[in-house]
Image (cartoon, rainbow, N blue to C red; front, side):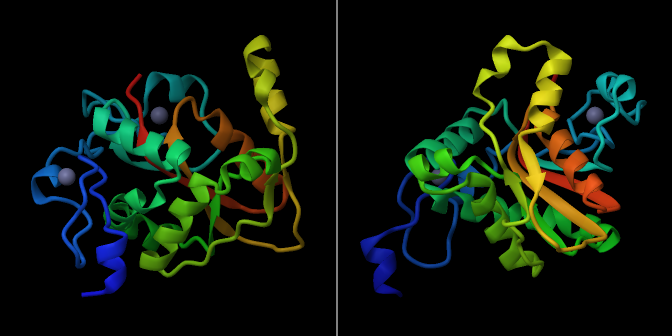
Length: 232
Ligand SMILES: [Zn+2]
Ligand SMILES: [Zn+2]
């Protein structure tokens, strides 16, 4: 038993209680409380759907996101998932991501065999936000997935060059444009296939903007994975 486990016990991502020292990352009963995204889900955005009869959500059919496919791990509507992500984002409790990322890597593995991304790219946050919080939750996810999937992380090439605080006051197309100009590719690196990572998939606008930037940087295949996603 490592001393560090006694001094800084790990906490369960679902009930937030301290776990017994050792390799356990979640309480067994809590593991069953997670609402993982299961079939059927939209083959574009990864949102869970009620019927297996459709391939895509209506919204995706009307306005296809630019990335090839997004896979999500759990439903954001679950109180436990929302609380966990809040803890990570605002309390810096990043260790809570250990179990979700390990479990998510198992879901992702068969997809990644086909997608063959060369790197994992976390959706960047602006420098100012990074200074305030000290970390980027998408990077925390990327680093954990990288460890279990053995795919390197590139967190320097895609950057957030401007803050997008005034989104509310813009129309739909204005918002998309504003977001698109918020990201840029600052690297001579060339990739063929990449996997973008984020904590929450809401409208898909951020991932879409990042995909646009990656495509313009010459990356042919852009996939995405998000730890949580909402139903429409
Ligand atoms: Zn628990
Ligand atoms: Zn969809």
